[in-house]
Figure 1: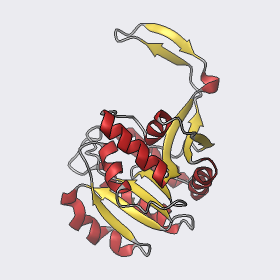
Figure 2: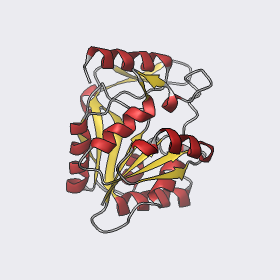
Figure 3: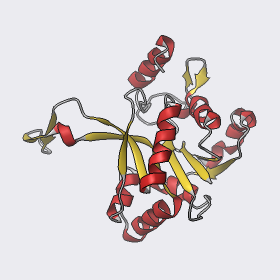
Figure 4: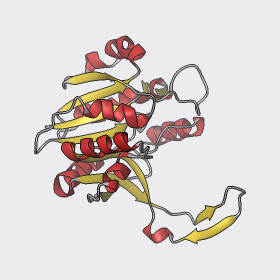
Length: 228
């Protein structure tokens, strides 16, 4: 079984307005509708878990879930993203061969081929993430703004989602982090703490995360231009 956890519990504080970013319109559809459509159409995903604030359950049921043919379950989000993902993991099958894909709902321009490649990577290595190589010069900077070092960008990749894992592995990584009070910036980091391998699969810069108003404009432009 391959489950997909779509994390849509964020408040969207960096994108001003009363409507949370996952529900914002984007080229005739909402951000969340576009994200769900990718997973609905993918032959590599069997079932969906949509993690949203519990207060949004009725809204999502009426506006999003009715159009989906695949099995989908709504899961209440946590206070932080990591807790929201864990809530989703607790609803996933935990068999030896089960895989889970974790994706931010506000990355609506994910290509179907990249999703499939990420799942293939998890099946092969146990953990796999989409990422893109850094192209800018990277500076390590102190808290007062002083440059401490220039990093070699040839070995630096920028992590994206989806991130896919053997379900038992990522569940164990999250449970260890919960016991030890560790908060990570992505799920792969928790698996890395176990010493388990996680491999990078080359993604696309078009797979952007809608965080600011500029991101929303860029995503709209990419769609209008037919680049995704």
